Image (cartoon, rainbow over all chains, first blue to last red; front, top):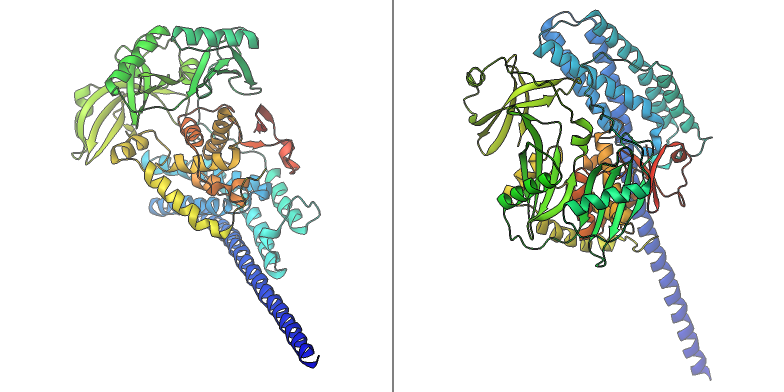
Length: 442
Length: 158
């Protein structure tokens, strides 16, 4: 009896010990896990704090730079000041993008920063490249930027000291919580910047995307869209089953119907996008696996030219070839009077396994092409080729009509294609003034 | 819908799988040049975009996947967002797939194709900057956005 009691007692104490041990072990594991999670959370928080502090600092530096510019007279200081401003504002934009997006309360601040970035780059181009002095309007604009960024800077500094004094963790801020004090402060910055009237810049400051020309024709019904898509596929001898309108875009620059074809075999699905006005096919896409290449780039170009003929495009020239595994992307533009019209693009993607069309996109052509009065070049090819950079091995020269990045104008240029080291470049030179307009890596 | 719960122990495995996948798709020098020629996107942007599409929309139709890729690229072009694919995808809080680790899954061929199509210029959303699932969207401000179109479960807007 006594011995059994002893044994029982020993077993019970062992079990209790084991149980306690398990508790202790489990608890330690939980603590470890918690501290790991804490460490990760602090790491994320650290990134946010860094972004916020960085934003506050660079807005302050930007503001100081703007003030300095306002008292600058000499050309050298102006150049240095503008480039510092340009650098500082990009710093600020970078820090802003590191903050949680939930803070889209800072949208107007973001817009202000972008305005300053664009304007400082514009002034650099104007002052340094075109050697024009800053106009009174430019000085006024800088002063306006100074005033606005001063407001943002003050608010950010106040916010920063609150974050510091109240030990606010940015990762825990919920701006959804309307009552949160921090949300209110963010909104206050936003409302103050928002209260400023929207800045209107003269032409040349902003990069612009040309507005698409409206596609002519009547509004069509979804059923007519399917008919248009059918006709397109039939012209290109692409087999298809019945199509149906899968989506309809509203309120877009070019309203379209998206027509979807599902073939018997699940692996090929065709999409055709038809403009709601005029029922033109703008894009065609299909998804399928592309097998080993049996054709080469030359075959693909010949096939693309053939397809363009079927679609009644005329005078199109291939200007860009991108070869990616078993697929070739080709860009065609109209060539008229020997001038390549770059804005009116048609893109075709050819699969090299059976040399057939994968994708087709004529959005640029459909929304940009019209019968232009084409200018004639003032300078000759020989004049253009004089005094080029000796590193640049010129291969071909041709006339190209390109769009200006900062206005709606089109510029007649000589496109000089050539190589330097292992790179191919196109240099676009104004055919009237001889000025280098753009350098593009091919 | 969660198919996968991301744990620390998966990190290593996934990174090995991803490295292998990356090595498999790293283009030859000739192709690198070709990508550079297409303009603003870097040679690894296709993969970043594919992973994002896979994490965000792998249950969607092909066009729904391209649409998600197009939204990311529209953000890259828009002034209000960062100016490169990486920064747009990893903007804190921008995409659920980054927050819940689904970004780190290996993208399938369909997602990679969708990423390529988006980079090639297909934008079924015609300029949308946002998308959300009307069934699960919790944020109030998202409803203030103008809706352009609906593709699958997602609503696209500006």
